[in-house]
Image (cartoon, rainbow, N blue to C red; front, side):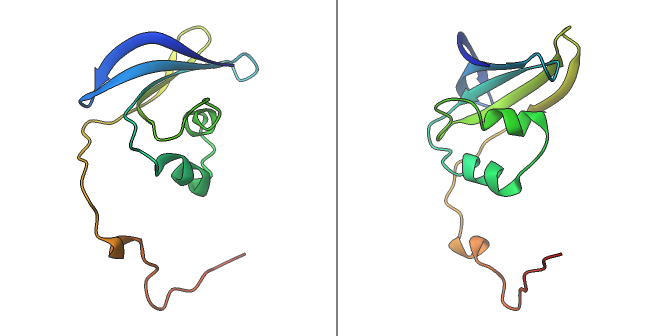
Length: 112
């Protein structure tokens, strides 16, 4: 279950709102402090990476997660014990050269 709270704080220069994802089955509660509205790359990136950690998997379930970014994520067990923390220290918006996203010449896809 995912709940948007009214809790606010600033993380890496962004005004963030806390979203809480909870799973009794996984004995996990994750607080996401999300902000911004121009992070359209993040959800496609998570889907492409197909990460198995709970911070990534649960964020894909957050409603209205388009264009926002979890600048701070804290995973805890239901008893409150901290298990994982991911935090953006700084964010520098800038235009990147399109060549950074091109497949290099000579690249060959490897499949098992």
